[in-house]
Amino acid sequence: MDFNLNFQLTLLAVLLVLSAFFAISETSLMSVNRYRLKHLSKQGNVGAKLAVKLLNETDKLLSVILLCNNFANAAAAALVTLIVVEFFGTQESIIFIGTIITTFMIVIFSEISPKVIGAAHPEKLAPYCSFILYPLLKVFYPIVLFLNFFVLGFLKLVNIKTNFNQKDLINMDELKSIISESGTFIPQKNKSIFLNLIDLNKVTIDEVMMPHTNVESICLKQSIDEILEKVINSNYRQMVVKDNDEIIGVIDSKKLLKLVVKEQNDGITHESLRELIEPPYFIPSGTTIYKQIQYFQDNQEKKGFIVNEHGDFLGLVSLEDLLEEIIGEFNTDIPSKLSKIITEDDGWIVDGAISIRDLNKKLNLKLPTSGPITISGLIIEFLENIPETNTSFKMHETKFEIINIYEQTIKKIKIYK
Image (cartoon, rainbow, N blue to C red; front, side, top):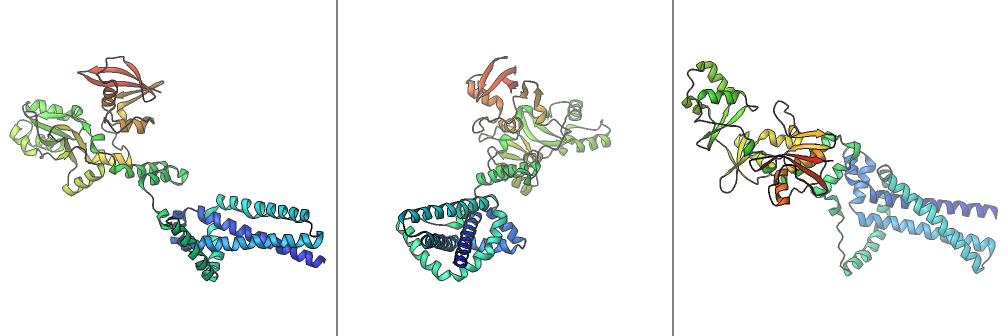
């Protein structure tokens, strides 16, 4: 009798362990990061390869897991009932107590605990579980097909479609979330570059251009000395050239310096300057950064003039500006976007021409980017007029104060923390 009891208890423990294994397998395989699993598979991990194959047939995988799990649970329940009846009799109260004990053991030791473990360590457990599940699926394949015939028939009857491969597809917003929540797995700098790359199709050149009011230019009506002085004092290597307010191109200060050395300054004429001018490259407003990088590459250009549908000059954009949107600012020799932000104890002083997108990124704000491009434009749209100096107001949960107005243009703004 003792031998029989020991055998039955051992068998019961084995059934509970089997049930726990299938519970761990189900949870770990269903919650595993499939992209990480595929990465391990490509690196040669045999367990990961088997797991990928199993997940490619999720309906059959679930069938074999639940078939074996339910069999183990049913067998455990029947065995406990047999033990109780054999040793304590057939009273209804005894059988009820045995059922309660069986349910408790299955729920605690074969369901909840294993599933919590499987959910906590899916990448570690899924490949190991696959070594057992893969051959099991092969053994029980006819039974699985038989069960799935009824399952798929029922799903079709209630008009529920299953497409497990669709789970492997993600959109851009989901990809951004994955990268943002990657923690320390991706360095912060790399994370920023990835996120910027994803946004290239959403951000237009209007958001990164230098507004026409800030563009330095020379006019051929000016004297040679005035032109040379302006070029020498410019922060930029290339200068916009105008003739009667019409843009006729750009001139490279390096080429101009060579001409000065060659002609000793006395032989320089407006005609010789014209020979150095490169024809303008115009870009339609609203072009995305992604497309413009391609256009720059195809046309072997590095700088372009942005114009609207009426041909009005809106601003200037360079290949450098576009690359900075991806990798961040790298040229410290010229005034940058950062120089338009001055940090104070209680906030920041910003240039009115700075883009809203830059402000959101640098100051962690949540100002809308669907309307005006610059903070000045957003304020004017919000107030519906050009404010006066020292005007304070609250916009989108942020306090602003107008510091300086010049020629009906907001030049300086204070943003409070």
